[in-house]
Image (cartoon, rainbow, N blue to C red; front, side, top):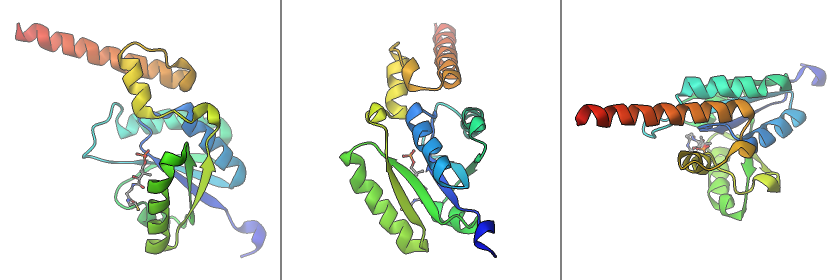
Length: 177
Ligand code: PNS
């Protein structure tokens, strides 16, 4: 195989519940460095999520469409098994702050030891160093403005989902009375 025909592929794994501007910062910069980026959504049945895996994939697909070399998939089980099956040699991870480093380093060393899959750490844009999907959901639940932290479409779907939940809760408590 000639050097020109080798596809340099990397994976950006995560829960993406939902995708934030911080995730997009990392995905878009990784897309500049590699021929192909696979954004892999972890299917984690033991963790409750606001959006289903299918909804998260759909949101990610829409907001990464313009990059051209990003595709979205899901995985369960070990990330390195997913990488091995698809010949993906590199995991790209964003580091927001030093507090991320300990656990990320542990996972990176484990993944390298398990399957020889390397991890590339990318410092997030300082604008997003405090950003986490869990915080965004919590703030939005209490009516805080998170519009600057999410792609417009994701922000819209998040508000719709929280509204649906509020309506469902009201209906439930009405039925109980
Ligand atoms: O967005 P998150 O929840 O911080 O992403 C964490 C994720 C999905 C990257 C990580 O939990 C993971 O890789 N899970 C897959 C299971 C696995 O391979 N575990 C061993 C890690 S050494």
